Amino acid sequence: MQETRQNKIARLLQKELSMIFQEQTRAMHGTMVSVTRVKVSPDLSICTAPLKLTITTLTLL
Image (tube, rainbow, N blue to C red; front, side, top):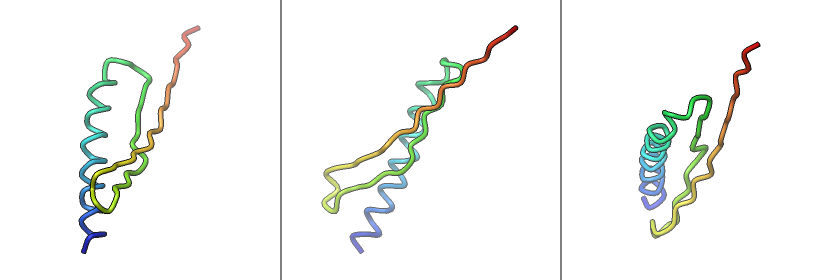
């Protein structure tokens, strides 16, 4: 039961964090932040969310 609750909250946090980073990086063209996974402690007091930052540059010749 507790693990199911942790997973639901982790999925919700991942979606919310993704939306926040997407909004904040919208003006920075060529930058993408991905929330790779979210882990929540059994008592729901600690959340870890590793991020993947991708920066692409476009060179015009």
